[in-house]
Image (cartoon, rainbow, N blue to C red; front, side):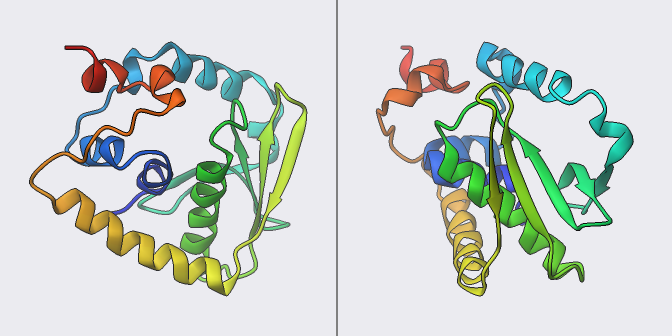
Length: 166
């Protein structure tokens, strides 16, 4: 199974969302929240695309990579899912490590909040992500969809209607 950074992100938010996504059920195109995040991503740093390169790692595409300093720049809308954001970016760093770039770091950027956060990948983080990869494979192989989790963020999730509207 090919595991992407999106799988890692969804694993840390909701296993049901992860399972649905892994079955090709994608609801992001119907979400105003996702559309707003996309707009922030595209408009926050207009000079960025000329300064950094897009890096395709096969299973992941990093939009803004500073090759000279080996820094991944990841733009997010809000810090509500900060833990998932951190693990998603650490997964990029793990993929870079596997591709022969062991010392890369990352910066999570929240332009609407004017906040940034440096992200590093430790050996413990890499080990944890390898365990997460195995757990993702187990979750996505399950016959039945995981149970709903009923969290406050469910109402803003792009899969909300699929999970909660009857």
